[in-house]
Length: 110
Image (cartoon, rainbow, N blue to C red):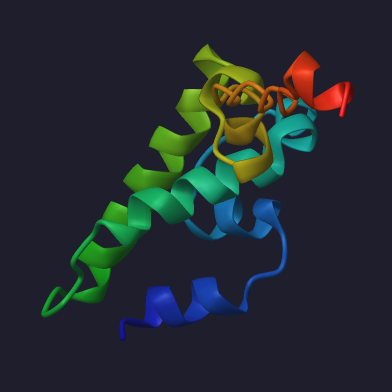
């Protein structure tokens, strides 16, 4: 594992990620959507293959993924992006409730 990836695993705040990767950000915007940005970055990083890359390349690609995730929430908002399950579930089509059982009228007379 590269030094950059090891360091990223130890960071505890979104600001630390932005600082380490030298990505400029608006603190006001980050305070509102930090969890969404970091989740999206994680989704992007999950599709990356860093095997055999030198640390400078790994850091550059991590920076690109953070910039991309941050930009997603500059253009859009959490409700439109829906990175968390609770927001995805909020728009899923819900199956209509099962109709109540039908009891024939003739059964009621017995």
